[in-house]
Image (cartoon, rainbow, N blue to C red; front, top):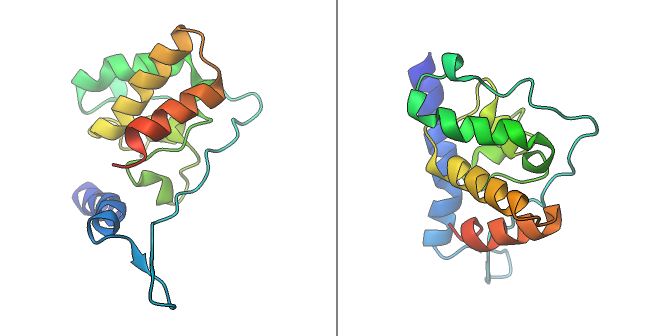
Length: 142
C-alpha cells in the first residue's frame, strides 16, 4: 500500500510542473492562464511541533536534521504553503503537515528546502510575511 500511495503523491506533485511546462491552462476564451496557487495559510492558534516526526520515526534518517529545524519553528512553518504539490492532498494544511505522519518531507527536496529557508530567515529575524515572500520567490516558480 505504501508504494501505491507514494505513486499517487508523485503524480500529484508532477501536475503543477506539467501545467507550467505546457505553458499554463487554456481558458474557455482561448487564452492561456498561469496556474493559480492557493495563498499561504494562517498559522493555527496554539500550533506546536508535537506531531512533527522524530528521528526514530523516520524511514530516511538523513532527513532528521530538517525535521529538527521544523520542530523549532512550528508556528512559522504552519503559515507557509508547500510548493511541491502536496498542498493539494487531502489533510494537508501547510508545510508543517509535510513533517507529520503521512507527509512527504522525508524524501522531498522542495519541502526540505522551504523548511531550511524558513528556519534561516526566522533565525535572522524576518517576519512571517517576509519569509513567505522569500519562499514564493525561491520556490513559487518551480
